[in-house]
Image (cartoon, rainbow, N blue to C red; front, side, top):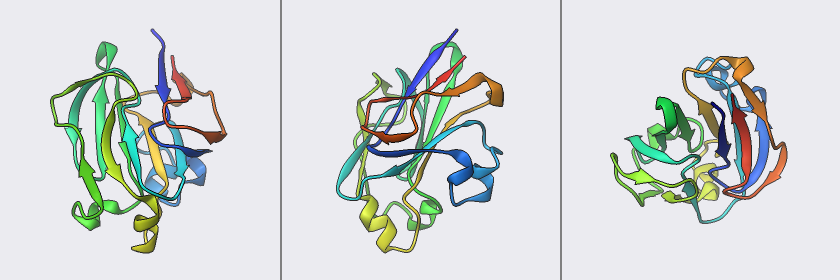
Length: 149
């Protein structure tokens, strides 16, 4: 089974080693890529078809076919903002199609609050070799980001 994971935000696709957080950059959460988002008001979208199994203002998990979960984390250390600067556009438990808006936010505001707006996109419970990058460099929200074999 192969899953194509889409970029949840527009910006520049990066390898995880470039994420300014040791837990994500070392792949401890799982393999994937990250997106350094464009600055300005934006909506983070579902990276795959599935069900929102966890939804916080700063992060969400969509579980798709075969129970594969994809984590989207909107910025680094943004949990400390306690939801400030984020607006939920969906609910935990919702069935979503890839590309559906989940959270509205402004990466420039996150950066102004002293945090990195870089967004790790993680294939949960995947082996590192199961993930292959499809994009590095400029991406739009909804572009193919990586394939999970």
